[in-house]
Image 1 (tube, rainbow, N blue to C red):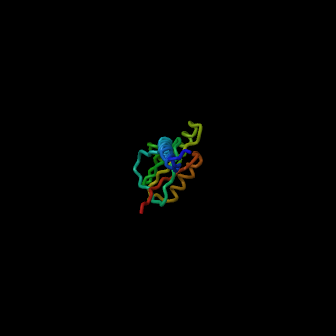
Image 2 (cartoon, helix red, strand yellow; image 1 turned 90 degrees about the horizontal axis):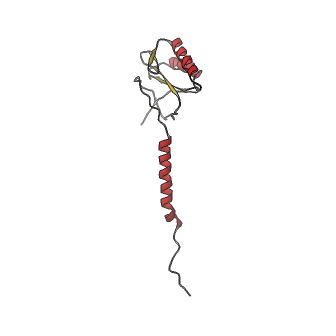
Image 3 (tube, rainbow, N blue to C red; image 1 turned 45 degrees about the vertical axis):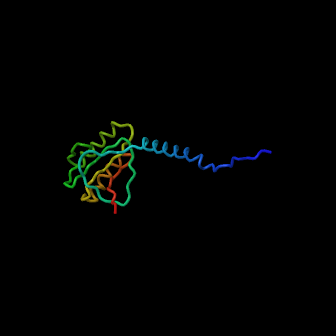
Length: 137
């Protein structure tokens, strides 16, 4: 009868453009969906670590502790530990949800000072973050 000239093709070649389109669309969604936490303000040199922490986006407050022993809350100086606690109480009453508190401490800061800041901040925050720099070796 009739002789077939057409041969079956591999289905992978037909699906490759669709898979590539899907991968590019997912990349666009992830790039648009991810938020970046940008810290502006006082210059602090962070301690080194081997892994990079995941940063979250939420209502955030930043507590700075410089190598000179000065406390900063966002962009305002704080005189002492009691004033820091009063600022946190004041700000937490204004907000309905607990914010993320980022503690930017200099690497020459003692563990005692960082622990003290963390214990104060943990009462008024949903999460306390201590940023570090990634050691790339």
